[in-house]
Amino acid sequence: MDLRRLSLFAVLAAALAVLATGLPGAARTVQAPPSAGGAKELGDPDYGVCRGTDARCYHDWGNFDPAKGYRVLLYTRTAGPRHANLGPALGAGLNPTLTAANVVQNGVVALGEKNGFTVDWTEDVTRLATPSALFKYNAVIFFSTSRDTLDGAAQTALRQYVRGGGGFVGVHNAFGTEYNWPWYEGLLGNANFYDHGPAQPGVVQTVGRSTGLPARWNFTDEWYNLVPAPTKVRVLATVDEPTLKQGVRGSQGHPGHGRNHPVAWCQYYDGGRAWLTTLGHGADIFGTGAEAQNFQTLLSGGIESAMGEKPFCQ
Ligand SMILES: [Zn+2]
Image (cartoon, rainbow, N blue to C red):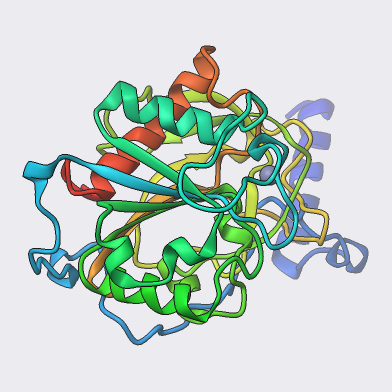
């Protein structure tokens, strides 16, 4: 053994000794980067309803007639922060006048025209006052609603509608809505918006059998961090956290979700179908670019499945 190999042996022996006796004291204070493994112990409340991916949780009670075609109600009322892509607040009633600034409303209407479902839109909570008003629709879409967007009557109507087999689609700040109503948190899949890091490009990974989307696709969003985070649902898409160059840590300290950072999922819930995505922040999501097209494919597939037009949550 020459001198060089001897010294290498000595270094290896020293390293093994350190491993055997534990790390030096100073190293114990060094913590892993917050994003390494993601947040843990985010809770798993029992909402007291049948929920998950088992179709036996669905109430097929004949409240919807596919022969009449497919119709959705788009609800965008904000009782707190308002996303720029919603444009100015809408007037009362059903289907009030839209301007070009109402990007989301125009976008969902166009998505319906392209995919064969009719879209009504409103920010008038009285249009959600009764279950019978909602049963006209194969799905109700909450797109970046905020805070206490429903009154008591609308809360009751939404719950009865879901129990009667209705479809619910929650997009982006639907996760910043009705924080203090546990049934709604459960409807979201046991999830609520907590915070987000910088809005930035990242790579979305399609999970399982989500159709029509590449396995990996580029998108720009805020990448919501959640508390609690989805349980018992079927995850349809995740963000690949290491592709977020500015990191995933949120403004309120959330370290992200590590290897399983869901951005879209689905579940049966209390008799109905719920399809959710945290994506949808940007002004260009209904544009013609590749990112926007993939978002629209994700969303239209979610709407069609929540309506029962296509297989749900498979
Ligand atoms: Zn946003």
